[in-house]
Structure formats: C-alpha cells, structure tokens
Image (cartoon, rainbow, N blue to C red):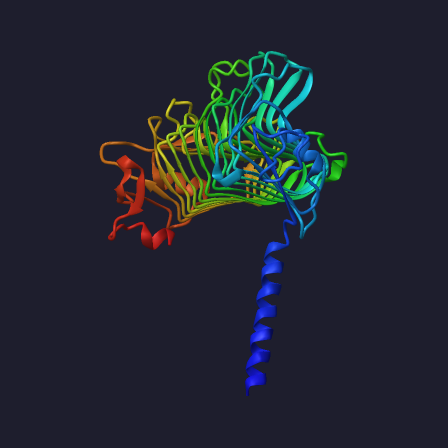
Length: 465
C-alpha cells in the first residue's frame, strides 16, 4: 500500500513537471531592454540592453523581449523568425508605458516604418505605443507597423498607433500595413487603437495582396482622414497575380468612428472614406462592429473592372450617423468591378446620409448580383432615402424580411434601378421584396442614445429573429 502511494506521488510530480514544461516552453529565453541599459550588457533583467536594435539582433526563436518603460527614438526591425512552438515576442514589460517615436527620424524616399516585419514568421508585437512619424515628401510612405514579404503567423496586439502623418499633397501614410508581396497567412490584429492619422491616399489599417487567413478584432480605429479598415485585392502587390487578394478572414467587434476624407488634401471636399472597406477581397465576414460618424459605414466592392468582392458576409453590425451612406455594395461607376455572392443580414442601419448626398441607408451601385439582403432594420436620415440604387446593372439579388422604420409625420423614399418610390408597396413590388418586408416602428429601447435593443412587445421580433 505504501509503495502504491509513493508511486502515485511520483507519477503526479512527473505530470506536474511535464505540464509546466509544456506550458512554459514557448519562450526559452528572456531579453530585457531599458533606457538605463547598455548594449555591452548581457540583456538580463539586472543588466538590460539599451537599444531595440541590439535586442532584435539577439532575439531568436523562443525569445521574449521585455521592453521597460521609456521613450525609444529608434525603429524596431525584427531580424529573426520564431517557430510554431517557439515564437518571438516583443512586449512592454509589466504593462509599462513604452513609446517608439519617429520624431527624430529623417525623411527619405521609400517606405519608412517604426516597426518592420519583413519575411519573418511567428512574431508577436504587444503593448507598445507607436507614434509621431511624419513626412513632407510625396515619395515617402510613413507607416507605424509594416508587415511585408511572406511573413506569417503574426500577432499585433494591445498596441497604440497614433500621429503617423503625411503632409504631402499626394502623399501616403498607414497606421498598420500588412502587404503580402509573397504568400501570407495567420495574421492577427487584435485590441489595438489606431488614431489621429493623416493618411493622404492610404488607409489606417490595411491588409493588401496575397493574404490567406486573418483576424481583425476588438480594435478601435478613430479620428483618421481616410479609410479605417481596408482589405484589398488586385492592386499588383503580390508576386503571384492569381493570388493577389485578401481572403478567408474575419473583421469583428471593432469600433470605428470619425473616419472622413473631407479636408484630406488628396480628396479635398469629398466624403469618400469607409469605416470598413473590402476592395476585391473574398470569403470575409464583417460582423458585430460599430461604425459611426464616418463617410461610409461599410463598403464591399472592387475598384478594378471585372473583379469582385466575393462572398462577403456583412452581419450584426451597428452602423449609424455616417455622412454618405450606411452600407454600400457595387462599383461607384461602370468602370469598376462589383459585389457578388454576398450577404447583408441582421444589421442596424440608422440615420446615415447625414450630409444629404443621396446615399441613403443602403447603397446598391454597379454590378451587384446574387446577393442576399435580409433581416436588416433601416432608419432613414435627413434625405429620407432608405435604399439608393441608381444603376440598372443589378440582378438576382434577394431582399426579404427587412424592416424600414416608419415615423409619424415623415415620408420614406426608395430608389430602385433609377426609379424613385414613395410608396413602400410599390417599392416592394419593383424590388421583388418578400411579403414579410415591413414598414413599421421597430420600437427601440432608447434610439436617441443609440441603444437599439428592441422593446419586449416590438412587432419586429417576429420578422427578423
């Protein structure tokens, strides 16, 4: 009996040790960086390095680099790859305030980024403040975090990217840019704040090129003068033209607001910037995001003729108070591509078209086919337009179980294939909407404070649930 007990104790101890080793094996080594350090040190906690450059040169697979509090006036260029079981992490130590600033960097032509991951794999950047990189050069693109080449298994989490600015009239800047010039996969951009950017022709957070598999989740993107989150294809970024598009990903639980190109020197007085924009992507889900005070809430299309945003699922988003329109699909003119095999379902689309630009709540443009528009609740803005469709190049689209908010003393307006309707029944007939599509009050709990929960006895519940 005693021997049995001893064996059990020994076995338990071995299992505990094995469990500890398996959970602790991702990082075999820790490197420390501090403002008080010295690059001649050994990089330990008591003898930290002084620069990110030194730490990056030493950080190989299985290393976590702890960066202690302070402002670092240098770039972080990742030099080595991790592996699946032994990634490399660069992280603010103990959640301290770690700032990477570009305030002293000289402007040069080409791409300049504060954090660069080029052809590296299994890398995580966590908890950094990345800021104050500006240029006056037309031919310099400034970027907060730049991931390029064939980099895969990349995580950017809990960072703040701010005040990345181009002051050139035709310039470009990005907060976070992921450019798949070679094949990329497994990209995760989570819990970051991207704010106060001057972007020129470019975007706040962009994935472009050959990227297969990604998550953009729980980020705050705000107060920027061009597109908030952009997923792009067919721009010639990839070295493989057949795979030059972003695909198989999810964009969810992000808050995107105050995104407008108005006053951006590249756009002048145009309201063109989308909160979330799919430009030629495929198999992408956009759900449970909140987008407000942008030019366009959510847009899915392709800017390239005969190309498409394909199988884009836009669902369960709250989209309100945007300048031009709430949700838009299709090319903005007949020289563009369009939107196919996609769905717009269970969204709250509330009082958009605040500038009276005739975009309404839902904008259907050129080359829109085989899409499902279902179970959305739409509330008209000042223009009173619910659906705006000024093109005839849309076909095989299904509209069913949508609810258009009826308001006492206010009329509604629908535009379908260039024809205007003030009668809901006439619009239903023209658009072949189903019998359950309704024009009534959804009875929101507190819409004035943007609480779109429906009251217990709302007549809409039986339609959209």
